[in-house]
Each structure stands twice: as structure tokens, then as C-alpha cells.
Length: 118
Length: 501
Image 1 (cartoon, rainbow over the protein chains, first blue to last red):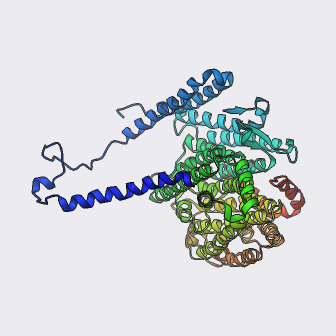
Image 2 (cartoon, rainbow over the protein chains, first blue to last red):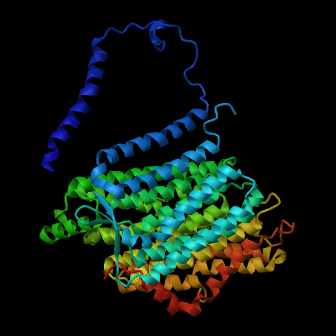
Image 3 (cartoon, chains in turn green, yellow):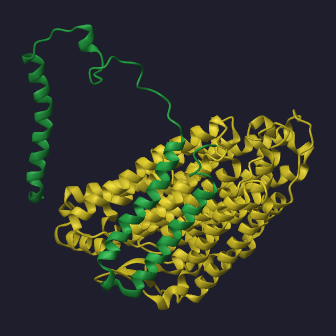
């Protein structure tokens, strides 16, 4: 338990510092509000429209397909590093893993997840 | 490093076969499109589940009585997955539930015009997850199984995606399910921090040493915190009061065969995982866990039955009744934990077996009533059923009396064994609550019987029949009626599932 003490102290300091800087800043800074100051900051350009727009669902599907490959790399990397220690068993294991991912990918492909224009 | 014994690979046949079938169905669904296969994929998936069930049952009898074959282990000989009779019985139960669900599905999918191949692939994947939950012996293997099951069931709960109720229920289920998964992992991180292991066997040994040295007070706070988080996450999954809030909405919104499935198979899987974790790893803590679980079981039985009385929707009523039944099953589990013998486990397995047939039967009648724009899930839809379809009404009576625990039916036997296990381990309060709340439950089951026999029918259109549904209902009714003749045999099979040596 004592080993975690520094971690606890760090957490405590983090919890104190952030509100403290905000409170101190509130009292020190000059407070003169104008219309242009209260507007959302957009690189100095005048605001054109609301940030809440609708995005095509398609972006999410593409993100999920990306995830398939991302996960693949994450697991292939350590396997490649330890390849000579794992031997044939590891090779077969990764083969099964890849097969599962490829089936998922083929499913997404056949379902038209990669077709941008419907 | 991780190793798997190739010579034991045949013990994994059910899991491997199920995974292969699920992948084939997924690709078939994509190639063939949604509409072309229809009933074809239903019969194929029924066949593949039957095939897997055959292997699982064969293995159950092939494994030596007290044998535990460690299928996979990490360095140091810690097991991640074992094949034993206890897990094998659970696997057979999941497959039975899945097969009955498939038989119920045809009519519902016809009525909703919602045939897709993914429905069947997801059912297979969820059962695969449950099988891992029944066999895992370390906290993360169990978690992978839990998530495989849960993610598939979330999607199945939202299957009728154009219906608001379905999406709402599924979203509640998803949010609370994800929260409980978070609880689980948070708990695992504390346990790992305190014991530097995730293997239940080592956790049990370390807890045993701690408690033998300095009593229950010597368990450090952060370890106890992690263990409680773990148990809470599992109680979420089996919908024990006060962690039951997602159940009524998810059950009401989901398409009825999936509701039947959710009330039976994932619940059994939750109990399998609870047994693996608590009886395999946390047994030394029984002094704390017995009162804690007893309190939740008590609340579950009382509140589940009281809330069920207030419902006007039959699916919602059955949802609360399934909460109450989870409470009864938990009593069997607590009896096993307190006495540390197999009697409570046998009672729990027996009840789960019986529960599949009574609950799927009751939901099957709801599906039989559906059609001509009538959902079939309101109390009013049952009015005058005896005059419209006498046999259907009689079957419903079998299921309801069995759920209520009236003597000649199977449900009574299940309750009787749990009651006896509770009495033998000295859990008098729970045993009495079980008996009293069962009497209360007869009131709301009787409301449906009353509507079926004593009221005039409001809807007079003939019901559309469905052969697979009729088969499923006949099987369920036959088990409920005639199980009493086969009690010693059934009990002998259930007694094969041991955890305590």
C-alpha cells in the first residue's frame, strides 16, 4: 500500500493545481467583455455557422474498417518480435487470427462498407 | 508465454465447430443477401447447433468424473481454460436454449419481415462467448467470453431497428452493460495490483493464506474493493436487484425470440461465470460474500415478484418474473458457497435446465398470439384465448403453473431442490422467502389464466400457425409435464457438474 503513496500525492496535487489556477486567474485578469471577445475563437475569421452539423454515417463505417487493420498491426508487431521463440505454434496461431480478421473484412467488403457512393 | 496442448485439441471441438459455423453464416449472409436464404439459414443453423450439442454432450460423458483438463496455460502452469463436466453441462444448456430460440424465430421473423443472415451468425457468436465464460479460469479469458456474448446480444436486442422500443431497450442494455464491463475491468486492475495475478487458482491460494494468517480483516482494502467490483459487475449481467434496471426495457423492446433467449442463455452464462469466479477464486471470502449475496437475493425475490404484479404488458411481466427467478437460482448458488459442497450447485443446474423450458415456452405463446397487427404481449390479448385456441391456452397454463412452482410440473422440482439445498446449509431466511415469494408469484401468473378462461375474446381473427413454433411449444410442455418421471436420471446428470471435490 505504501508503494502507492507517491501516486496518491501526485493525484492530490493534480486535483488542487487545476482549480487553483482557474480561481486565481479569475481574480487577477482584467474582465472587460465585448461582442467580438465573447464569440467562439475561429482563427480570427468571422463565425460562419454552428459547429453542430450532421456527419455521414459512412465515416464511422470506414473508421471501423480501419480498426480491423489497426488491431491486426497491434497484434502482428509483438508476434514478429518474438517470432523465433514462438515457432510453428505461434505461426499457426497468428494464421487463425488473421483468418478471423479477413473473414470480418470480407464481410464488410461484400456489404459495401468500402463503396463511397451508394 | 502462452501454450496450448495440441493433444487436447479434440476437447475444444464444440467451440471450434461453433466458430467455424458462425463465420460461414456471416459470409453466407453477405454473399446471398438478406432475402434469398430465409428459412434455409434457420434450418442450417439449427442443424449446426445440434451438431455442436452432440459433441458437447459426448464430451460430457467422456470426461472422467473429477477430471479437469487444462486446455491452455501460461508460464508457471497457471490455467486459462479448463474442460470439465461442470462447464460442459452449461454448454449443453446454452445450446438447448439457442435451438429452442431458433424454432421460435421463424414466425416472428415472418411477421416482422425481418429475415437476415446476421441474426443467425450473431446467435452462434453469442453462444460461443458463453462457452468461453463456462470454461475460463482466469479473469481476462472470462472477460473475453463475456464481451463476445454481450456484444452479440446488444445487436440482437436492437434487431428491429426501425422500432423505437427496440432501439431504446437495446441502448439501455448497452450503456449499463458497458458500465458493468468497466466495473469488471476496474476490479480486475485492483486485484492484479494487490496479488499480481489474474489466475483464479492463485488468487484463491493468496486469499487463503491471508485469511489463515490474520482473519478476514487482513485482506487489504484495495483488494476487497476490487473483489466487490467484480461481483457487482456479474450481478449486473444476471439482473439481480439493485442492478436490474435495464431488464424490463430491454426485454420488452427486443424481438420476442431474442427476449426468450436473453432471459435464458446469457443468464445461465452469467451464473456459470459467477460460479467460476466466486467458487473457483473467492471461496476464502465466503464470510463476507454469503451475507452480501443473501441480501441481494432477498431483495431480488421480493422486488421481482412485487414489480411483476404491477405490469400490464406480458413481456414486461415475464421480465420481472425472470428477475425473481434469477433470485431463486442465486439462493442455490449461495447454498453451495456457504456449505462448500455440490448440493447447491446441482440444484442451480437443475433449475437452469428447467427454467429454459418454462420460460421459452411462455414467450413462445406470446409469439403464437402475434399477427394481424396484434403484438400479442398485452394482458388483453390473452382474453378469451381458451375459446379461440383451446390447446394454446392449456399449454400456457402448463408453463405458468411451472413458473409458479405448482407440484406436478418441472418448475416445482427446481424450486424444491433449491429449497432443500438452502435448508441444508442453514439459509432459513432465504428458504422461507423463496417459498413465500413463490406464492405471491402465483397471483400474477393467475391473472393471465383468468384472462384466458373467464373473459370474452376481444380479437377474433384466427391465429396464424407455425410448425417450428408448435414443435418448440410441444417440447417445452412435454419437459414441464413429464420431467417428474425422470427426476433421478436428470439429477444424476446435473450431479456430474461438480466444483468441490
